Image 1 (cartoon, rainbow, N blue to C red):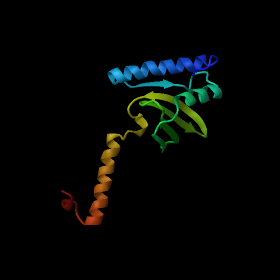
Image 2: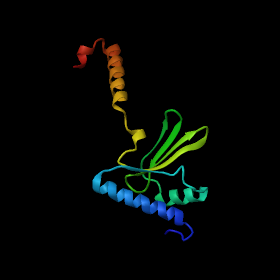
Image 3: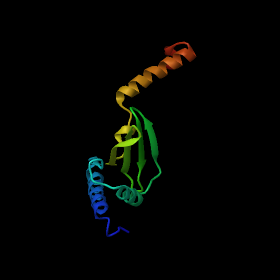
Image 4: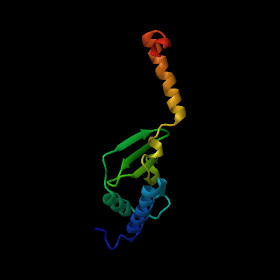
Length: 130
């Protein structure tokens, strides 16, 4: 149940709901940047408590640490990027998969080349891969 003194958090939850309903209808992804909002620690705790945690979470180490978790509501994700131990970016993302978790095609191309090299080294030549 939403608390009466949590009007700010309630507004964020209604905005999340509107964007989630739009995503469900159109597939259009959305993001709510919490970093510039005047949120207290209590507000963040209340927001995260209501959204809850789903089944998927990840820690990513690329240009700093990032933490990503699906909330208790499918397609609603919490994404936090850290810099120097403090939160550098704090987001709610409405999407099937947050962009930080999706592989870039250039990375996939590089990975395919490296895997081919590893297989060549193990098997002797690339022609045996075909």
